[in-house]
Length: 48
Image (cartoon, rainbow, N blue to C red; front, side, top):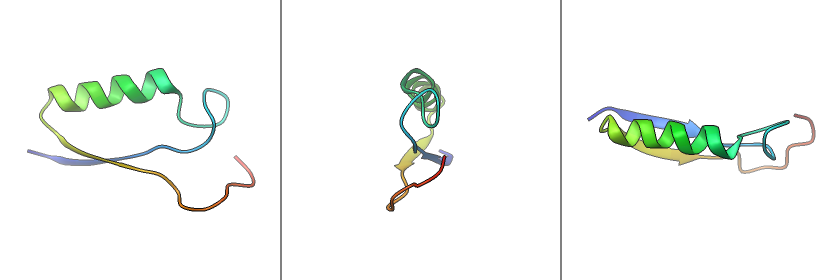
């Protein structure tokens, strides 16, 4: 089982992780049997 990390950041379609793209990517990885870890920056983002 491959290990995969996905980084989600920003505030949506214009400057970050868009919800539909994120969900479809996670679904595809799940169906492929990947062990997925979801990560996000732990700090304020001043510029995107």
